[in-house]
Image (cartoon, rainbow, N blue to C red; front, side):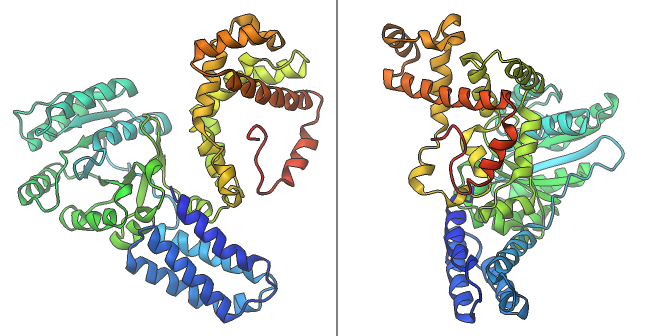
Length: 454
């Protein structure tokens, strides 16, 4: 998300960073480019106008024009205004009520409500240690009930069965009673997808809302619909009094207009974003972190949190002890590192959150391909245990066999072995206490590829 916007804003604002003094003309020209960038990102026009107005008012003040580093001062103003329009800070679900706390998910057809229900259930179970029950009130799509039952089993939460012969209100009331009997902390209601122009369906969800009085009512919307997502959320809010929004499919949204428009248009916070199809790819929405990513400053906090969630600490410590004892870094270890990188969202996700990566040339970014990671894992899996422990034995005939087994070419084998050698040399430096020196060197690599991407 924000790929295009990040590139445009970084180019526009970087022109001012090195200037000793800023003129009103240079600020106005930069803001004109920022305005175009926001409109191209499909941000709602009223949001763009308000944003530019606020930034312009502050940028033309004495604080920037007389600043020793006016370019940096302007960047801070833009950053703070981005944070403001997206909601200042992450707003968590309000679960401070007598259990079971009822959370209703509503939205248009195809927005991903059922999958998001399961993702949210997993998040509440894993991150907040809540006992969660889910129920499908969608009586129009029989597969929705079966889908939610399957997903509930995958994330190991309670599932309340429902039937297409029941009314949504009856299903919800029965689920509330069941949640009380089983001492569930949270009950998630997955509702049928509907169109806001469908009066009958909107009346049905109003009745459902009135019957169970959910503590949280979340609108699930596809981020790829851009500013239409904000307008649709506003229409639903007029009917249901929403408490928040979940943006789905943000991994396929290169513009980001929905994220920048929803809060300003609806007055409701974005509480979560779906970042992929996997069941664990739902993250709390942090406006300040997103603003930093938009401006090419990276998102180190989210990167650290990803590592804490997905990196096997026991394996990492075991590898560190092994290298420290001088036992070497082999292809089994390399494969483990690649798999853990995939668990963190892949190389693209890593680069997206590293500071300075927005300044990389397009031809360099194009080389960051998560498919290559998959190929490398497949290549290593096609090797014998001996070859993984002693890569030097991999010669011509072995390379041909490995290429055939992994569906790759000999050139791919050579490329993977070269990258492994680079990683192996780096690990040797770690083992010799060279970590401090390497980190100091890396500190001077602003705007260049991290190790392993060359």
